[in-house]
Length: 311
Image (tube, rainbow, N blue to C red; front, side):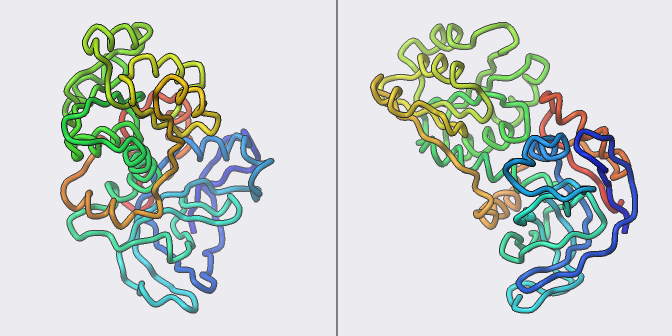
């Protein structure tokens, strides 16, 4: 099968041939149509995670996929050959990923793709959408509340906007100025250009009594402490940071929540996508996976990047 193969950490990858994998017990093999590109893929290729999770070289990156099941292993009862599915491939190691014509995955991390959702939209969803779902859930938004979403123009941020609007919140999107129209189209009511400086003074000017919540997927601890100044008493800061100073925030009368991804809730995500939830997606052919990874590494992506594995 064709696959995008990276020979060593930090090396340029290229199309090559790999054996077609066989599913084991509880697994299915998917004929991949599209594969999502994520920040974790950049980290795997660079070798940043090799000391934490086994990585098998030469490696094929990729965790998200959409495609059609063409073989099933023993014990799989809820999926069948011919099912169109999407989801996240989880294994105890990296290296046999979804940037390939076939991928093997645990059946438990895949769901049937709604008939009105194309493969590209489905492949864009699992990690970014799941993470956004976890962040929005941690923020516990209520209708009418005001929430700031940092990094709103990327994949996680774009899904977070859509999910927060779905919850009835008033969304302030912090992003680069050139993405203002994009985030407004997703439902943001206000836009703050973080490239012009600290967003906190702008928030204080427009919301002098403070805002209800902040959703952040990538800021460092110093930035998170500064952002918390924009919250009203009892406000919530939902972050992926494992070093979030929850106790320090509590001492300021605020609630800090270390959020986790919601990939285990992809059935819920599927329902939202079937109902029309979409974000901007840029596609690359599988042969240009290296370009897609390079763009992802800039952290300046508009929405989500997806590889077209089978046109």
